[in-house]
Length: 99
Image (cartoon, rainbow, N blue to C red; front, top):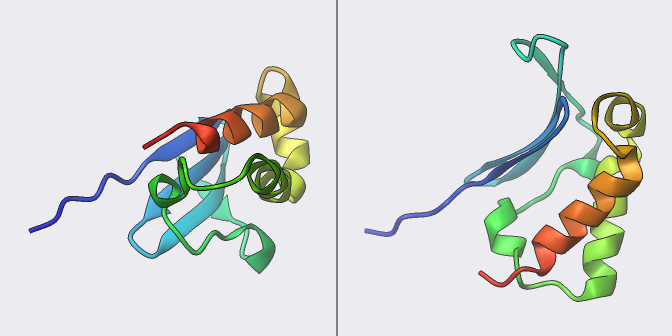
């Protein structure tokens, strides 16, 4: 038997939620009870977050972080301290951590 860790990362009301087949970007409402998914393929990752952690080059991690927040920039800027710029940096740093 193999156990997989599936992380979810919260950037205000924007959540990167891993599942066995990939990662979805969900935008939650103000009460965090309901959400909408952004079906744009540009921001759906085909791997769980943990499979990417520690495997990307710095340039690739930065580009991926920019792409992730491209379509949810307004929500991140409104609901996350430091906005999109900080979220991109933090996600890049998270990707660069080893296992």
